[in-house]
Length: 348
Image (cartoon, rainbow, N blue to C red; front, side, top):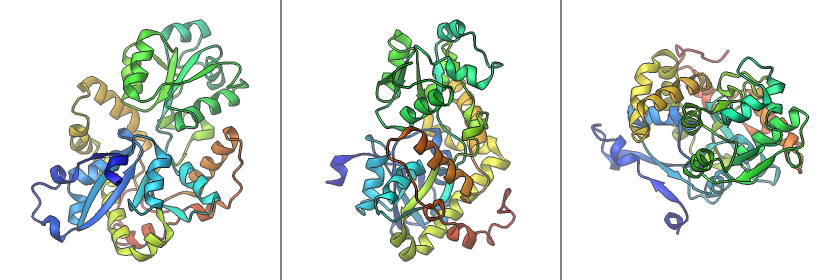
């Protein structure tokens, strides 16, 4: 039944080729992703370069086309071991009594942004040199595509609009479009003036003449700077009963993040096969744009979790009031840290 509910991405058989360890000897771990793309680059690096396999892990990635809630539901239902995605999804689940925790950071800057067409940017009189508020106010009167109601992309557009003094429901039109192909088609046809998504889709639109409102991956927008955008998240009982496996996952992830920080060219070449259908210029631009968003260590920072809660409270009707310390644990990272004590960006 599980296989009928999702689209599985069969990475494991390809990624483990060439390693001496036999699959039968590896510990199987299922990771639930709500999408694919540059949000998961550290995972891709760890897979492609064999870091997970060297830790004795057989990683299976399952991509849920219906998004974060569906992916986390698989973890809660024990159909997957860990969810890799936006902590806000887990935070909302925790407010409803689900004991899930983030235990490793994958991306520590906002991985999505908003692009608008050149004509709209010109009409609003904005450029990359314009004040951030002016750029957000350029959304006024536009039709902006998002993947779906309540999605991260929808929340981001609403957040930027409200922070600029606009009413998301009155001053602009937010249109659920779906995934990247639909978004690019609607944008190129002029059915929408812009959209919110992550690289390489945003990069493609930019190279078609679009204007990216803000470089969120570089922390350009202070309210979202240091935002924990992608994390490994699991049930507390799974972490307690699979501590050794969790430590091996974090160790492999940490090695990948250290490589990205110290040898980005090698890391880029490792992930290139995951984007085989992306043209080289777009891939290279997307890589450069995303690179600042990856941490050198998987340690979860309190401020990154707090920004998730503030983000949610700014755009969702049901406020979040739980203690942010309950949302994450660094116990796994702390246990692995002595082994990787020379890692760049080791815990402060």
